[in-house]
Length: 423
Length: 149
Picture (tube, chains in turn cyan, red):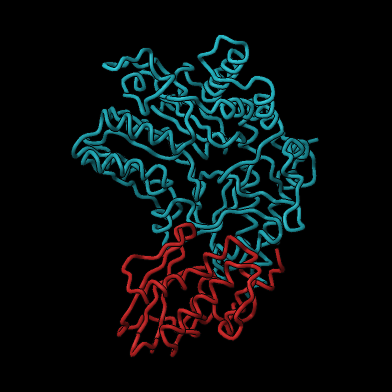
C-alpha cells in the first residue's frame, strides 16, 4: 500500500511512499516497544547513537554463544569460524562503501579512533613545520582535536574553512585556502549538529586538483545515505558502527591502499607483525598492520549484521524516507513561535537543531524526556560551531528510518508543553 | 521521575526570568568562573567580602533555568552572611542535591528548598550545583575555573 501524500504516509499507513514498511521495521527494534516515564519511547537521538535491530543483537549473542574464540591464530574450529565471520564482516563493509579491496577496510573503535589513526600515522609521515591541515567550522571535536595535537607536535597549522548563516561550507573560501602547504583536508560528510550535507565531491575535486588528499568523517552519513568511496574519490572515509545500528566500540577506517601501505603503524602489538626479534620487527600487510591486539571481534560481526540489515532495506530508500521526515519536521517546527532552527542548509540530513526564546535546551530536553521523548541537548561536541552561531547549545532531534510522522507530532506536542511550563 | 511541576516551581521560574544580583561587581574582592563542559553552562561569581562577611555578591553567565535560578538564589541566600555561614549554606545545599535520604536543614536552606526536586533528575544536578562550587572556589581564592567534570 503506497500513499500519494508523502506526509500522510509517514504516520498511520504501514508503507511509506518511499517504499519502507515502517510499522514492520519498528518491530525489528525491541527497544522501541518500551515506555519511558509512562509514555511510549520516542527516540529522536539517532545522531548520538542508533538503536539496534534484533538481527544485530542476535549476531552478538550467537558469536558469544557458539563460536567465541580469538581470530587469525588458531587452528581449531572455533577460531576458524570466528575468523571467517570477522573477515566476512570486513567484506560486507567493503561492499557497503564500494571499496576496491578488503584490505582497505580497517577495523577501529569508532570514528574518533579512525581520525586519530590518520592524524598520528599519516600525520607523522607527512606533516612538517609550517604545513597546513584544513578542516571546517562544522567539525565535531573528534575532527578538531586530533589535528591540533599533531599540529602542535609538528609546528603545523590548523586552518578552518568558514560557513554561512545557514550552516553551509563556503566553497570559494575553501578553494582559496587550499595552498602549497596544505597536506590534508579533513571534513565531515554530514554535520552532526546541524545536518548540513557537505558538497563532498566538490571538496574532493578541488583538493585533488592540487594533489591534496581528503579524509571524510562519515559518522552521520554512512547510516543514512549510500556512500561510494570510489565514486567520491576520497582518500580516507571514517564512520562508527553504533550509529549504523551496530554495536558500540567498532568503527571503520577506509583508506586507499596506496596511502595506507606507505603509512607507519598506529599502534604496535600482536597481529600487526610478520616477525619480531628484539632488534627488528617486520610489520604485517594491510589491513592487519593497523589492527594491533585482539580486535573487537563481536563488534565487527555485529556491525556486519547491521550492514546486512540496512543493505536489505536499501540506503536509497532510507535516505528518501528520512528526507520526508525532515521536510515534515521542518514544516512543523517552523510554525512554533519563538523557536528558531539552527542549520537551514539546502541539502540536509534528518537533523533538526533548534533554540527557543522561552527555554534553554537543557530545560527543553528534561521536559521532553518527561513525555518519553529522547533528544540531545548541549553543544554536540561542536563548540566552535556553537560559537559561530553565538549560542551555548541547541536542542537536537535527529531522526532515523524507524521514526514516524506520529513521533514528529509527539515532539511538537512536547514542545508545546515546554512553552506551557515556561509561560 | 517525579512530576515536572516539582522541578519547575513558580519560584524557580521567577528567578530564571528575573534573576537577582545578575551583575558584575566592580569592587569584588573575590571572583571565580564555573563551567559545565557537558552542557556549556557558564557562571561567573563576584563576591565582596568585608570583615569576614559577604557584603555584596553578583553573578553573570548563561545556562538553563535550573543553573540560573540556583545562582540567583545563591546570591540571595549568602548576601550579608558571614563567610562561615555561606559555607554552611553550601553544605546544606550540597547535601540536598547529593543525598536522597538525608535529613535536610530547612532553616539553613530557606527558599533553596525549592530546588530539592532536582535530585530526581540526575542529569540536572550539575546544573543546580555549578554556582555553588564556583562560590566555594571564589571564597578559597582559587584562580582555576571550576568544572563539573
